[in-house]
Length: 220
Ligand code: SF4
Image (cartoon, rainbow, N blue to C red; front, top):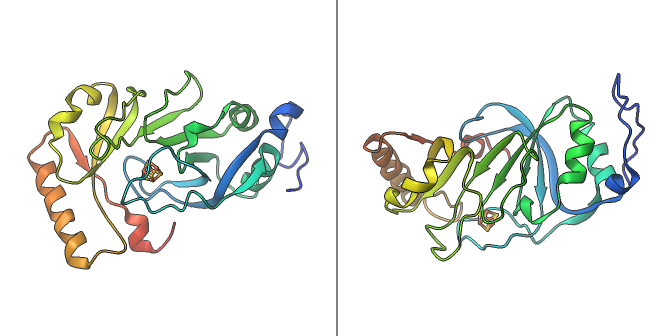
């Protein structure tokens, strides 16, 4: 278990609920990096990657079935190692888990909390500071998107008609289209997707191009 004292950071006067500290989560990894894509590209964050997901997208680059069980205390101890006040809950699908215990522990220490979610689970009001929904209904047309509001909508482009997002887009401040990138495919295959996505963004006002720049940098 990670070592933690309530005074681990200067001026820390947070009083933690033992039940919150004991809450267990499946965690694939926790790491400090620069957000590579969409609105916050270039901004350092601590990424908390949760295990398990309710979908199985073919382009998924996360082994979300390989994880360790960590308590919220363990997670807090890990997060406190980094000089960074911005956290992204990602996955897998983070909204499969009750994030309120982590919210209370991290908000008591003034962290900014973001989530990247597939949108199939509605997010409680006030849980997060920034909501990025990346819907997968281009692949799972029968999966209902329940989280229909947020800060950014980030869609992987696989040739779908963008009219399918006309309604959903109304609930978001920003809309990003991202080329489908697969490590296992050739440079030509990925390059063609890049070119097609760029062309679609140029002819569809309101959409912005999102590139996974962290992959070019060779970081997570
Ligand atoms: S929703 Fe996200 S984490 Fe889940 S399978 Fe699809 S890409 Fe992977």
